[in-house]
Picture 1 (spheres, one colour):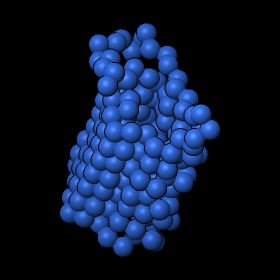
Picture 2: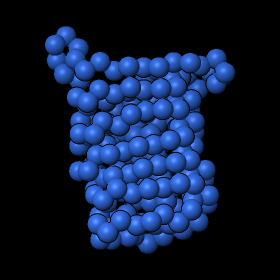
Picture 3: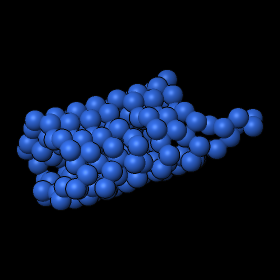
Picture 4: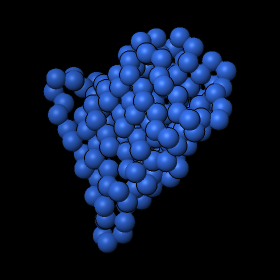
Length: 171
């Protein structure tokens, strides 16, 4: 994998646009570690992407923006772990489970989540997260999902919510 941990944030202005097809084949998966440590500031994913494998974008320290396709069916653990510059997150994928550690220690300040489940420690350590809104698909918030999100204003919980794990919102 390409490692770019030594780059300076002021020097990085890179948008990566993933095409919907390559050689007439649809792009449906972002592979494990595909962009790990990449010096990118924005990722544009096509609607054809249905899977983001584990660690696909982890440690992209300069990533500020990413669109999550609405028809995303699978996201692997730590997919966006330690993306410290990622500020706003919108996930409107009603059948998706956000997995363990998916956005752990990200710089997210605002999030809208309309997913089926939010996994254990999914947003743990997102200390800048202030505003959180849930869509009507959220049924489960697992243990420690928002642990140590110390800036978080208590969110309004949706009527669809059926289970909240231990310490889900512990500061």
